[in-house]
Length: 326
Image 1: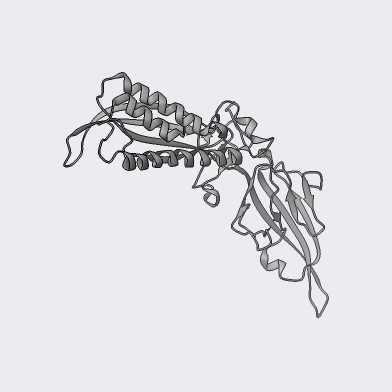
Image 2: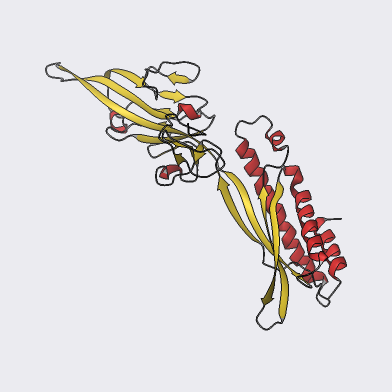
């Protein structure tokens, strides 16, 4: 029996009838430098960075004579090509499989010559370009939901039975998505509706969470498991919304004359998404306006020990992505 039909039948029985982000991202995914202004770039964890150019867009459109490029990484050491760092002979830098500790200041110095056509006089020129690169993750989604059901009385075991049944049905609806219902609760209130008598209603709240026991098995070894869990919880949200829409449809279609004392109150479902960040990451719209919805790696001087949405101050932290304050 489908879940919404099962719930309707039990109600009658219980009560009876009545890509990377940068403001200077070029058309081909190239990020140009800007003299005197660090360029902020956000790279998704375990993805490759965009290609960073050791020159500004104006210099790139001109001839450059005898160019040399020197890249300095976050540890203030000269960068050379390896399995994680790619530097081309034209000074283009890519950081592969970007990690929390890959975050920081990347500096490139471009050295070149200008030559006067009339005298062939050479002048050495140096320009410095700074790139602030941050690892980020997508936030983890959860949904806070509330619904209302009419009831015969605020006193009676059938209210508890309805509450437990509803929780069981919802968990069964979404269990294959590794999601579950947590923190459910209800209160009974007396409600006066205009042009109607007093009614008793159960105000039910619960959270839909994507981390049911065994949830890591749904990731299939994906390093970006929040992509999987977020996709699953969106499906779970849709199923629950459809379940309550069906409750309203069944009520109006089948009970036009005899109304069950206990029934779903149409349009009472409210859904609010709540974001959280993994430890070592947080949101800061002021500091990271180009990635305001992202969970950005905590900078030195801050940490995040749990699934909060902000990084907390800790002056003894010197690395990116701290999960504790020494």
